[in-house]
Amino acid sequence: MKNKIILFLTSLMITGAIIYGCNKSDGSNPYGSNNNNNNNNNGGNNNTSSSISITGMSFSSTTVKAGTTVTWTNNDNVAHTVTADDGSFNSGNLAVGGTFSHKFSTAGTFNYHCEYHSMMKASVTVN
Figure (spheres, rainbow, N blue to C red):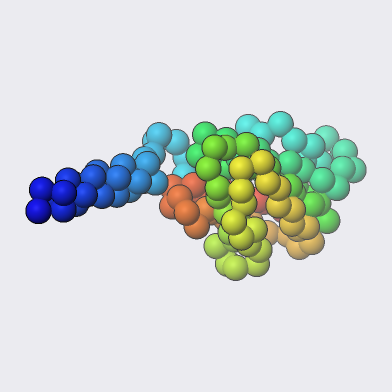
């Protein structure tokens, strides 16, 4: 009986820690910030690629021109997904160190999130 109680309490503590970690928010903008260091076609550049680094349990929002391929790199210490709110793209499980690319062909704002961590949200604005 004593072992069952210890097992139950241990399971409860682990579950609580997982829930806390997945829902922890730092109070930042839920759609990320536009502070990524990428080549996103500003100032007349004709670049057709842009990169977003996933770090600190957050994405970055970006603005690109139509035809640009955006590549996300998971530089965090846990797996994530890059999933469009409208379902137009989905990386599936993006392991630590993994990358995912998507070409944005049409203008619009594409909000995206991580399926594993609900507080991770950002957007790609395509001009």
